[in-house]
Amino acid sequence: MTAALTTPAPPAAGRASGAPRQWRWLARLHRPALISGGALFLLVAAALVWLGGPLTDASAAAWKAYNACGFTPRCSYDQSSILLYKDVYNWTTIAVLTVPFLVAAWAGGALVGRETESGTARLAWTQGVSPARWLASRLVAPAVLTVAVTGLLTALHHWAWAVGRDRIDTTKFWHDMATFHANGTVPVGLALAGLAAGALAGLLLRRAMAALATAAVTVGVLWAAVHAAVPYLWPSVTRVSSLEEGPLGRGLLVGQGVLTPKGRAEAPCVSGGLDSCRDTLTDMGATAFYRDLHPASHYWPLQLVATGILLAVAGLLTYAAFRVLRRTTGTARG
Image (tube, rainbow, N blue to C red; front, side, top):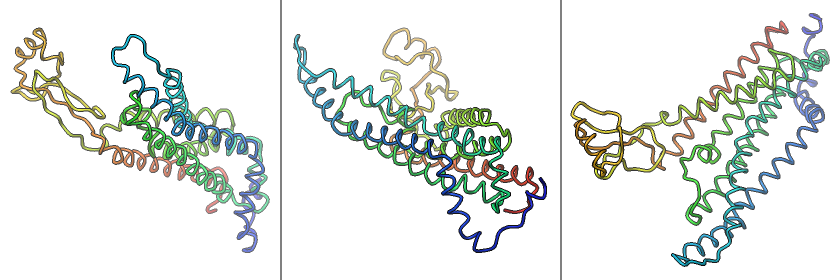
């Protein structure tokens, strides 16, 4: 087996055509997954186009009719259009956010895990394809496809959200966490990290189902970490307001409380206009409320910093995958 793993590389002409041949083989081997994934992509993309077009128009017209009713006891408006818009928005948001998990599961369970478990990978290494080139072919083309699919879906989601933002009363705020992620570049970085995590898990575990589960859990952990870190990835702004006004400012909340002669303190209540709350704040020596937040102008800085961190994680996982492959096959170079 050792001799097979150290088989000399094929001639230069063979190497020149090795990558395209590997990609064609990869496409044939994973054709069912590509077809089902493509169908799912088209379904979600079509739903987003429908959401940003006819559904937004119908829901906006229904809200316009509802707002024109005032206090009229009997009001006629298309409630079903409002509810349908809300349902489709929620489901398409979930679909976009699920893509990184699907990519990780595919990479761990089929792209690498199944080939190492079944021995297909070792067979390829005996047919003039070096282990490093085999792994590169399992990462490069899928990475390009992942960026294209995830990027297009998030762009369509952002467009559909923006079209209804000023026309539909129940449109999600930009800082709603599900909307925040689905509208930006974070899912792209997370999907690439999931691809690398799946490849690494497949090489380490050599069991398709175990690698699938490990890669999906890794994406979940990364997502939770990003969710917790996002408010602190960019300097926030502070809004100070009087005790009578209460905390003011809308955006991605970082923290809030009261200002006292000793500095900042946690606010036991936020309704300074009420006697009970006012008395409590007076006893504390509170002089004003403060609120640390990110305004809408911080959206893209937060997105890009978070995505950059995820891309760095993806790079580290990819490096680790090649190191594991080198150690397990005993090859010095691809």
